[in-house]
Length: 255
Ligand code: PEP
Image (cartoon, rainbow, N blue to C red; front, side, top):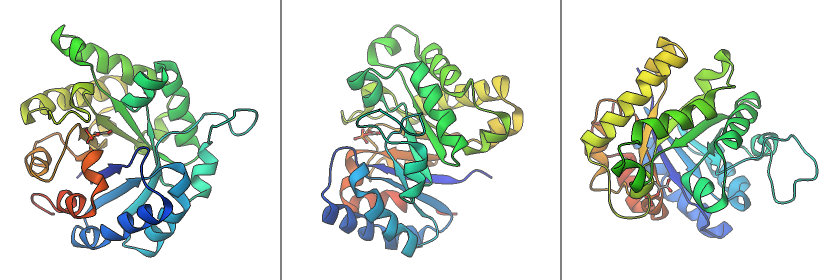
């Protein structure tokens, strides 16, 4: 049975006090959904503060970094290593978010190095993949996602595969208010699972949690979470309001 993961990507938002308030504001919902994992991705500046809240909170509440760099240390101004994230209390890290790829020019090759650095440091890597609108309209969705998976997971050792979570986030759905239908999500999630079976192994394909992300809100979360190959959601904008995110954490059938 795969874990259901409800993740909140706070992006470039929140002062320290706002971040702490937001984390405290979802603790009750996490308690009400003990079989779900709730992962908060605050900005780097708030990791330690939110990490402390998570440590004192319910056992299913975790904190993660929004990005990392693959080197362990050195002259890489502005970057943060996997070990530094672990040091701040992180258990997870996002890799290859579409904003990193499209706004900051992150390449497929870089995502592969980041995934390897993350899992070797003991982190769970939440690997984001997804097509642009033009790619979808050109019928390239599966090819794009498979190319991103190949680059991201190509160097991941078999014994590290249990530390991989995939987030399917169609770029056209991120922050646009346009959500993929459950049929669109299911089609791509099934393709991702099939790719995992072919390129990793059947056990990994069955076990890997595949999250959907892209304009998830308190109204559409339950339907998405009830979709067969959707094992959770990665939420941006709607995770910035504690009451809304709490409703997403407890959306649908808890079990
Ligand atoms: C995201 O940034 O990962 C995301 C899914 O954003 P939003 O929910 O705002 O579309």
